[in-house]
Amino acid sequence: MYDFSEENPPGCIAAAPDFWSDTDVEDASSAARSLYGGHAKTAAAWCAICARFDGRAGDFMFWVRVFRRLDLEKIGPAQSYGTTVIKP
Image (cartoon, rainbow, N blue to C red; front, side, top):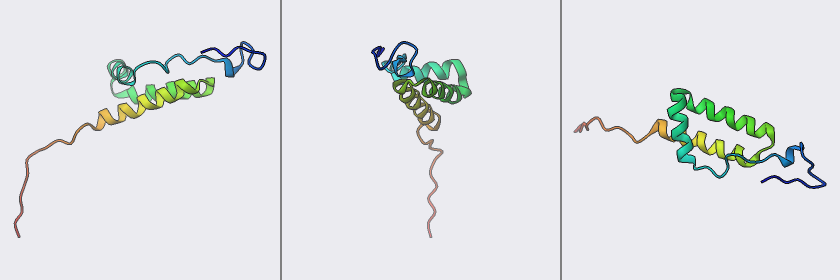
């Protein structure tokens, strides 16, 4: 994933590799939840920010997807606590 050329010499942000873009989002969100618990979304957000500032667009998008996945996991399916029927 390195793009070394005359236009992008080593050390150039455009030559920065994407480390995480080939990783499964579900596996990464499970690992983040396991490692960071309730702070998993914050950890994913920081990873996204770091990737963005490093110029790793693929990694940035990967961590955004992990962040969104963690958000969905937190909400989860609606809980059913029974139903109440009110008749007029």
